[in-house]
Image (tube, protein in one colour):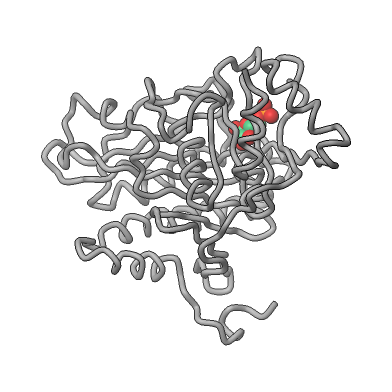
Length: 336
Ligand code: P6P
């Protein structure tokens, strides 16, 4: 494929795309695109470290564990620090919530303006880093209830339902580096052109297939899934179901990116080890649910839409059924 610079197609970067999208809002002040620019800058730096992991001494663990009790990989720490440094500088970012940090990070002092909350998983799937499997960064953006930071209430301001998101997206560091984002007007994808270091528009208004004979789940835990999920998995293997395939990378962003483009359903049910599911509501399920719904798909915890859930805690986990609307509804039809 010709590089974007010679293919004759217009070259639209993610920054230009966001600015054009903002022009539709007369009240937009442009600070939203400035803030999103901090995310794209951070993911380019992360991408460089991921691509050179074997050469730079960034593979392996730091020897510490995070709030989730998971071993922190060196690249996790690099990704987290990079995002905090790139966003903390942006004057409109007030609070940040990271998978790697116990509490919200108050980016602006009391009295300083900072109307956005950025919630993120800096490098999801990190257990796959050392074996060169695709990994990703996931982000969710909400607005603060008050424009100026209050030292005693940052946590309460972050515990908002996913329907309050003003933007969400991910970057998948795979065979190519692709960013997908939505601001509530469709899902758009950009590929990083390393020849000039910009994310260039490659798919606009992405629509998820309404159905797809592919399910994505770690069947090793099947024996401890609630019965309804087990009944669904038995059905998917029958002739009546018609040749479903199982695809599971074990890296949420990669599994979702495939589901978004090819259709199907991703499942992380409750298990004996993770009775409330393994995936985190605020910075994994919410952003991907926003993207899924914007692309015509669906996202549920088995009882309600992911985007309607009001979190009780910052690192709350949730069961997740995510994908094509017909496939999500089919799974739900098997649940009690
Ligand atoms: P399991 C990676 O550690 C992660 O958080 C997600 O990226 C992925 O979907 C899930 O865990 C895989 O979990 O239990 O199947 O290894």
